[in-house]
Image 1 (cartoon, rainbow, N blue to C red):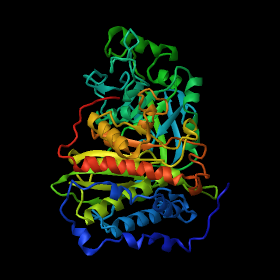
Image 2: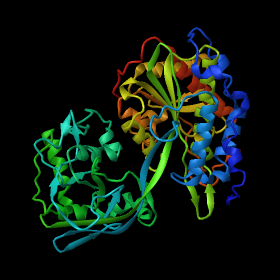
Image 3: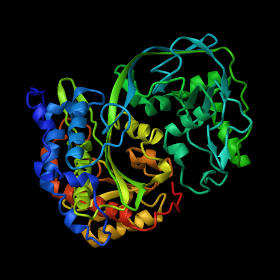
Image 4: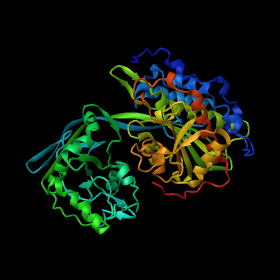
Length: 542
């Protein structure tokens, strides 16, 4: 069903629509002493399907215009969430800016202009021979010094950067990661690939740390395979994109996918010879010296038309008692796809559902504190922006944390609950739990115990498989915490036919199911916040 814009006359009323019954007394803000002997059930029971639906009918209404990052609807959603936190007695912890509930920052909205790479007399075209992901430093044509860095990996088990100077250079690397002669991956020592294969940002991050200006990742074994692997990027050339800009203070290596033919020209070889490097590494069982004599007459231009795009994460803070310097983060992203061709993409499930769950958990913990049963550890309720643009809001928070990351005990992240995938038709009492055991076995045990004691959902670990082709572990905001060695658990009901479609509407949400999942997150957070010993980081699973 197509949905067209309604008028915005009622928007102001929506933004102040926090329940007066949840507004705390003056004494609530100060808080009272914690009693860890309190039963959490009375507070979990305040998380209701009715409240979840009430909040979601605001956040996923046409009046909020699909909550596109940086646009009016996202700003309206931010105000609504902040008002809810404030009404329930949570503090705004941000010391800078005009609103203590907002962590404001600038992204960059940009569109591509002219883009090409020349190697001598050969010219390669952006959109055909290569694609740039994110920002690019080559606004004007400039000469690039090329260097080959194997697979572009810098890892304790394997390094392509030993004694290699890439500062200011264009670094050509192969996609994927090396294997040993027996077919097992060199880094893991098993048949399980690592994040060097699974997360496209890892190689760019490694190159950035080494001072590289760009990293050119060779995709596919033929140009036809390259076109198949990069087909989804074609539309990126014709529509504006949003990301972090390249700045002097925080330079980022441009992340460029290139065809085998273009890579071969850059390395003065033939496309079919590129695979020989991987064979040499397999035989040696370690990185080997480059066999290529790189081209020296390379020029690059990838022009961008840019404008700043202000946006904000929304933070509500509940201070703990005797362990208040330690922090639990409960997160969801509140942005969505906005308006396309005059049609509103409301994003009720993605991720309005997770956002209203965070709002309900905030209310429940605030009520516990009002009653003298507040958490021992502090809790940050974090609604992040720009998840749909590449997990940018959570990345900004973890790179500019309001509270020290070393004091952050765990992150519980909620994205897309209250719908059901085909694998669970007729069996709605389930949730995919992803990543709970990757960094802390204790977090996994706490989650299991909370479910067994209180909610009795089917906890499905299908997507914990490191070889899961969907790569869900890397596709929501918890991953930016996990990258910083913070244990995470990701709660997710799976994809469905309305995913990223204008038909992702409130009326399709199963609110009793969302209530059960939200309560599971509450019970898990209650244990994390009130246990005497901080959970240990004792795993390193990929």
